[in-house]
Length: 180
Image (cartoon, rainbow, N blue to C red):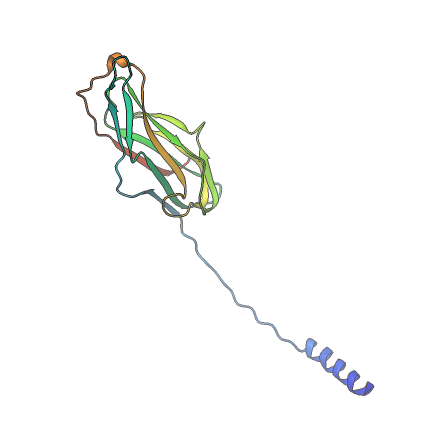
């Protein structure tokens, strides 16, 4: 029996020295990616001022569909980051500010997802403003409740400038760009 165990151990030792290894070269390419989406898609943000219903009361802001979500995918070159900026085309009615509040990231994405600029609140105008900065290789997840929630609201800053016969339709543009 001892001889059988000795022979088996010897064969195991010989077989481990007789192994041959091969190698294969593997390569892959990851292309640069920069994609941006708003959810729900094709939704219109509607913000209205309604007249007071009692003497002495102020006008109130009514909102419909004032929330959207930014979804993005980003693959960048080394030491590069991206940001999302916003601007409006059109004129906000006199006496009113259009405010954008940007939440912190939520969802099931991964990577360097960036962060809202400042305290996440901007007064929008025709000037390009950064909303989210320091985006690197990342994806937010797709759809509502993934990414950054954008909430639009109106703020009356000067009642004497209000013209209740005035309406405005604005085009709001969000752009994902490489940071300089």
